[in-house]
Length: 367
Image (cartoon, rainbow, N blue to C red; front, side, top):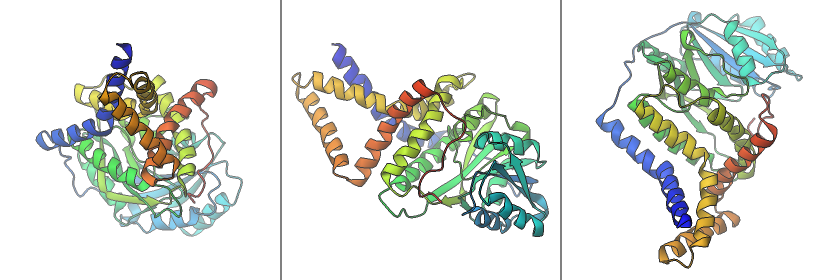
């Protein structure tokens, strides 16, 4: 009896988080949409680029930002150098010498979020926009972000994102297309449950200094909602970057990322002061998604225990074994799914054993 409860509970939870919830969100977004009241709005903006040893990409990042289709007297750029030891600071200062909108802010080594928090205190823009050093923005990206802040209820906006074609086996682009569709529907319902690191913006009055071990991507959207504000998605504000080359590189990046996610899920007080709709969103899209590796392990164990109890359990076990075989043989999307799902388990174990550092190394191949 216990094995059957575990089987159907884990199967139902996986089916809900992977398929049922996204479809339900799309349906409800159609019948009860809450549109953003966008406008031709050009507030002052401080663009913050956190960087640690980014000499290979920082000049390109700055030139891309300086070429944005946004009033030049309405935005400035601060590179928060997280104690870079290569030529990053020198290259930024060279650009700043000829372009007064660019400034270097040297920070003691403390990680990306600590550098961002410090940069916020050193800037004055009404809107704070954030980007990674290896990202690129389309010319109208900042204008598209800013237009959402014409709605006084909006505190946070993240843009759309795509990956350049991977040189190797990574399938991250498929994942992001799915996530963009889901974020679009969550935004129509009210607020998204997670942001996108290469391109997002926050109203200064709503910015919250978060624990340096937390990432803005997961922490800021739910914190905005807890304060009665909105966190929305703007698909026309587009950024792109180079992904990890291979699925194995992406797996290691995901382990690192999920460690921070587990910290926020278990200690970030995510479920406080949330309305019923957003509570379901967070539980479905975040908590169950991060628990998917554990749910798969429970489902596999229950399927083995029940293999003689009926055809449905035999088919379930057979489907799981086929998935694992396809992953072992290198079938792209199957291998990606299995490795990324397993990363949620490995990251939880690492978090429980070692905690979460505020600093980390860049993923291979992303520069």
